[in-house]
Length: 84
Image 1: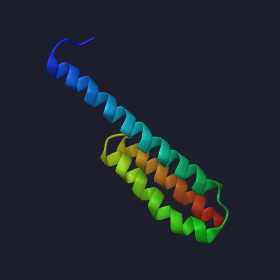
Image 2: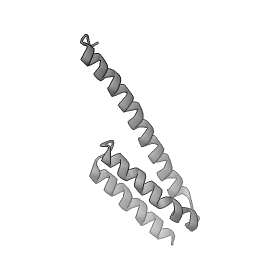
Image 3: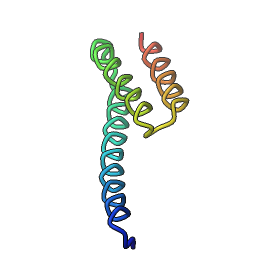
């Protein structure tokens, strides 16, 4: 365990960031699952921009890589378009 004040603070900050990032990631994954499980075109059309925005925010916060975000969005849009 760290002995310096600054290092102890860094550990506390890291824990808070990790918890926050895990929350955002899990919430986004659940939103993606819900979107892909839905078969109603109206619901999917309303939720798609929100889910894409959530994925973009994860990439902006460096929770996921920008290329992973792009691949996720591409796959989701393909599946949503296949519903039509």
